[in-house]
Every structure is written in structure tokens, then in C-alpha cells.
Image (cartoon, rainbow, N blue to C red):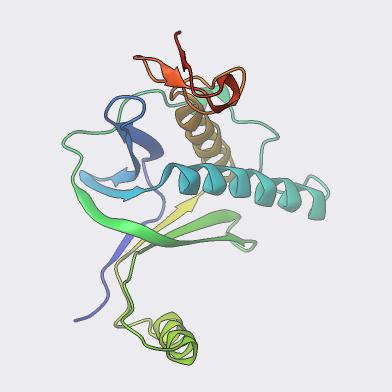
Length: 196
């Protein structure tokens, strides 16, 4: 079966969002353009890492070009998106591997999210060989979401993604673990339940 690539060049909208209540949220990346919507699920830590790396890569592009690249220092307010994910949210795949790149010729950020693949191998050598084969197989690889963003779109995505990650449960002031609405068994309180 040939690889399915969901390409958005450029997207009308590319955002991170969630479905569910804090503590039980499912995180998604969602791209849309011309009536098409693609949603892929991923872990909260993946969303946070992606947003941080996008900001770092954009900062490096600005530094290397001496400020000549069309990349704003902060997310422009005119592209700030606070709307919920487009419904219905239908997961195309669960993200396993992500990649970032800057296309200096087109002045675009490239974000790739590839489906999680379970490898059935017996040894470390078999695992390394299977991973290498998968990385080289452009035609028959796992599904992939590929999005090409302007510098402003990438900054806006990173800001929203970090806002979404931080919108969860507040941390306990003693142990920094998330507080549940029903309370929290804090290890720093020797296991006693701490109310809100």
C-alpha cells in the first residue's frame, strides 16, 4: 500500500487543540484548507516539544539571516487563533515521529508528523535495520501530515500550542503534580489528601 501524505501548502489553519476535560484531554494537531480537515492525535509532551522547537528554529533562522527572514519575533496578533478545533474531530492516525525544517528558498517552516508504527523485531540489530528501512521508504511508509507554514503562521501555532498545554490542571504548589478537582494525594504531605 502506498504512503498517504496529507499535504497542506499552505494551510488556511494549523492548530493544536484538545478534546475532553483537563486531566483526560486528548491532544490533536489539525490542519485545514479548501474544505479539507485533517486531525492527528498525539501526546501532550509532543505538542509542547513541537511548539518549543518551532520557536527555537525560528529564532535561529532570524539569527542566521541577520533579521532578514520574514519571521516575526513574536506571534502577530492578527493571526492569533483561539477558536476550538473544527468538528467533527476524526483522528487520521496517532503521531509517532515528528520533524521540522526551514525551507530557506521559499521562506517556509515545514512540519511533518508521521504515524506511530509498531515494529515486531527480536534484536536491537533488527530494530535498527527496520527503522532505517522505514526512514528510506518514501513510497510505502506510514501516513504523514506535512504542513508548510509562513514564519508568522509558525509563531502563531507555537504560541497557541503552548497555551493549550498550559490550560490543563493547575500544579500543586508543593510537589508540582497536577491537582484534580476532587483533591490530590501529595507526596510532600506524606500521602494526605490536599483539597483545592
